[in-house]
Length: 216
Image 1: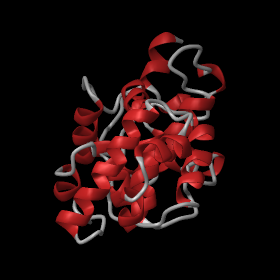
Image 2: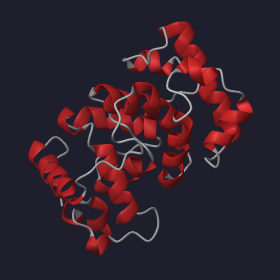
Image 3: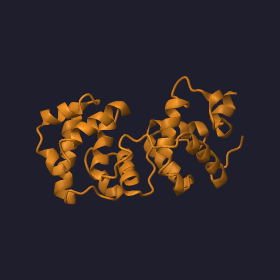
């Protein structure tokens, strides 16, 4: 099946199918627009399951609301609040350092540009774009392992890293899908297009998939 990567109709068909199946955003803090909470919860979510991250975020933000309040907590207290997220000791230090940077460089506000967000130690491209998309409703593609894997299987990109995938997708994917692709592909990756044991025969978008065509 030849795939025209610049065909808006093709992208529309894929995303319409996924949007009907995954109607709500899985995001760990889907009901908040607080940039600071979104930033911190994204840091906590790295290498951690959503069902662990959400309670940890809620515990932390039941104690604090601002960067200034967070840095007043001891490292031990932060560790207790966010446990058992992965690498919780390291993340306790990281989110306090991020809070200090926000206070000292950005007047305690989470910046609205990718460049400024990436200037903060501990904030990577995935986190920066998630903050831009979720907190500020700005067009940004958040690429994690699911987006990276599924984009390859569909035949959209041929890249080695998630950062390269983000750059490649930004060239071919219409902006109106940038904010949707992460949660749709994460849900699809968890349910169907898994790293191993993928359910290709039951996939709702297999007719648009290069990987499916090559193995069946």
